Image (cartoon, rainbow, N blue to C red; front, side, top):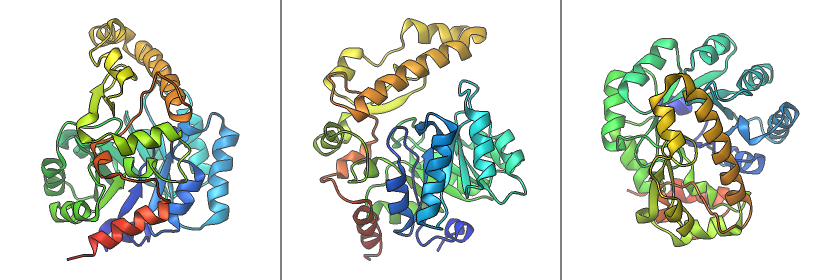
Length: 317
């Protein structure tokens, strides 16, 4: 038992990470019923009624705690409405990404809704702790999607030494042995994503799931071609043809502060469309998000079985 499991009242210190275009209600329900918690991105649902329906569907199947991931960057014009819905429906926790969590923390204060904030370094972690965050999600260099730059072996001990709130390690966890190593570093919990993309409940295409089995850690690269921010993806032939260096728009974005938010929005919308086509259907233009933990994926399995194996392995001396 850790400070995180006590906070949420769950069996195991694991969050099924919110994954854009991947996380769905079936995955979340299976995770909750297997003793961990889970979150999904609000942006996985195009309209507010769809978001509300997803939250209520999960609530109708289980009373276990789950959360919503909010992109709090100004480029997400849906954010104000999404936050309002999360508060109205009293989700158990909110994970903030890509922006200041101040408004989320202030509005959730006193509601019972916990706020966990993505951080990639000590400086930002100290800021969100001062704002009143309930925990930080330490996004390290082994994470899939938007990864950090610091390996978990450095980031987790650094944050534990300087923070008083729980530290949730995100990135590089795919086995029970790695769970034990993370706990030894001081992590209070773990956010695990890539491993669950290869689940039976995952809605992504067969081609995406097969790629998780056939590619390995050496095939993971970072690209800024999709959202303007570094994103870890599988190095498919199409990704190789795109290249990973900054485009003209990206260079303009970084050199002009006034245009930055508008260009970032354009890049993000373009990237999201490309990711959606790749994740949900077969295409030669394949851009699949994943972290280096694909090295440990060898089969498509039910969420319950994936979690069971993790816990069983972690309990072996």
